[in-house]
Image (cartoon, rainbow, N blue to C red; front, side, top):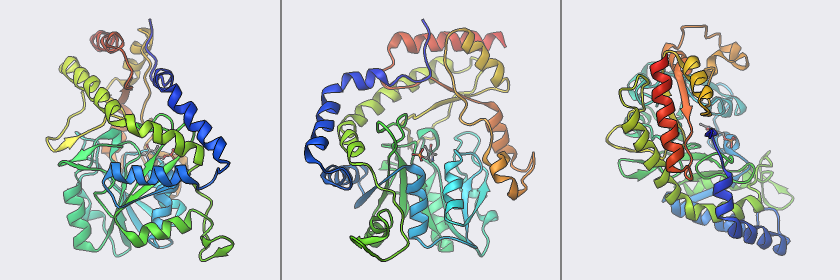
Length: 368
Ligand SMILES: *Cc1c(COP(=O)(O)O)cnc(C)c1O
């Protein structure tokens, strides 16, 4: 028996009647763009995140980019981003015409280290973009205090953290705005692309609703050079079905992560650390090993699927060669990208699958 890295079939089979009904509602409505399902999903997702607004958009990258646009952040501006993240965080800044300025993370939590940010600030800095990486909330109090002191905006990249809590408060409402992704493998995933912005700022939400829809408040009257980045009506209908199940799925992810952490402690690979104020939702379960590639191979030999999130740090990607950040310029991120490996974790994993991953991992680590 082998264990794939991710298997969404059990999730979707178990909720087939709900997905079928969602599809039928949309077909019967003959309303496919910005209709009732998007409106209802926005209301329900805002309630879930305990924010005043949610604005549905085409994907997570657009969610982040459109917020920067709506904040008038662009050419000549700098935005603080983590040095270790999925490249979308950086691309959102680049799309807006601004420059991403990387800051190293806390190597134990993989998240932005507030104490390192101040040294990276310049008169051009406009915003800080913490990422709640792998489903673990970033340490927001230090980041928000720094932002308040320097008059900066805070944009959460919550693409991997639907439902995570920081000191009891949900991500999505911890800064000025947050961007979520509903890419299929995310904790709340559509059956295609999707994204949303959450915010408590009425004016920002209103501006985003216009920007995502060609910059027009009234059809064929264009206030801004806007974009076509709308959450699809069909995806919104599927997401409404899934949102009701999200908390249960996150509980299942937590149980698997707790079991992994307990069983893999001390076996030779480093398991993720959780600060006492964090309630992560375990989008990914990421271990660290100096012999990462050998570990991945040993796990593959034992039938366990793994993925590297991510193999190359953004500053080492050819796409960002213009920043001229050579090897060794961001050593914490480079070490992370060289050593991380994600184990299988999805809500419907069976106990037998979890135990198989554990024994293969202990065995593989001992063989290195
Ligand atoms: C998935 C992801 C995004 C982008 O989301 P898409 O919906 O794929 O555009 C942004 N940031 C992070 C950290 C992500 O994991």
